[in-house]
Image (cartoon, rainbow, N blue to C red; front, side, top):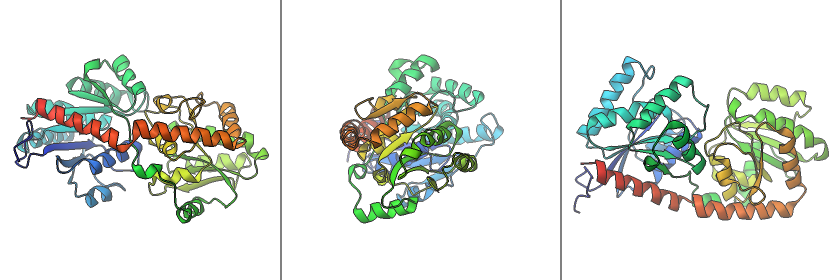
Amino acid sequence: MAERPGSAGSDGRIRVVHVLDNLNTGGTELNAVRTAERLDRTRFDVQFLCLQAHGPLRARLDAAGIPVREIPVRGLLSASALRRGLEIRTLVRQSRIDVVHAHDPYANVLAAPWVRLAGRGAVIASQRWWRNVHAPRVRAANRIAYRFAHRVLANSPAVGELVVREEGVPRERLVVIPNFVDEGAFEPLQDERRAWLRRRLGLGDDDLAIGIVANLYPVKNQAMLLRAFARIAPAWPAARLVLVGEGKERGALEIQAGSLGLAGRVLLPGTVPHEPGIANVFEVAVLSSNEEGFPNWVVEAMAAGRPVVATAVGGVPDAVIEGETGHLVAPDDDAAMAGAIEGLLADPGRRRRFGAAGTERARRLYHVDAVMESLESLYEELAGLYGR
């Protein structure tokens, strides 16, 4: 095989390094791992650099045969960060890396300047969040990192516009590539699997399930969901609110559920092994975040044919179309959230229409085949321009 232009490997493959803060089960981390798993290994040689290389997702990279190297730092401005930056520069030079793809602000800051200093290879920085998720010093450092990146990848049009408008990234360096869902997300669960998942979540056979899959963090604002559910619970005795995930708000949410008289009707099953089909067990999928980039959960719920009620924040309105695939409400508006959920519970026909429209939209815009083709084309383009 002739060596591909821009590729360093004698086998013609483009060498790609993903840089990631950690391997815990968050949206950014899961998206990075799933992306690496699905890259065409006949065309791409893939490896990971992680500031924290141990976490639930490490097993998936090991199973896929993707090398992982830990590059721990004590702080973005520490001596250890300088050493790790020099390691990245050396790796890019000596291993003739073609593309370095950083997925979060810590990775952006650590990778972007040092790849440029390596004198070869392209660097992609990413923005997968909205405004105020990170500390001010991290946001400031990340803004500087964008100046070194050959491309800045946003995971929704709204996030892309934010990057241009508020981060000063030239539009010609912006690329919008959304999160994706696999074909399995569109397939109905087998009856036995669905029954097992409902039992795992604590649901009975006749329960009406309203569900969210998200870390139990303040920004996800599950407290607002509890207030919304308290408004409709008396009229819907079979309804259950399921908060899948773990995080520091768990104790506060348990106390709040008790104080609202919802004990036994708000289920907190903890973290469930990732399975896109989990949305199939819910009658209505919900999202209550105060801020979001472009949440995997919403796209997975749409693929599964679930109507979505979500807060109109960040990139959520890029996916959820009001009155077509679900309903959008203002952040922290529990009255509006309650009304939208109750309207769907009362109208199975509307749930089916919204669900079918969501599936069609998810297949057209967010299916793995379309999204991975765009990303692989980007890697090939940048390897041809900057890998040598």
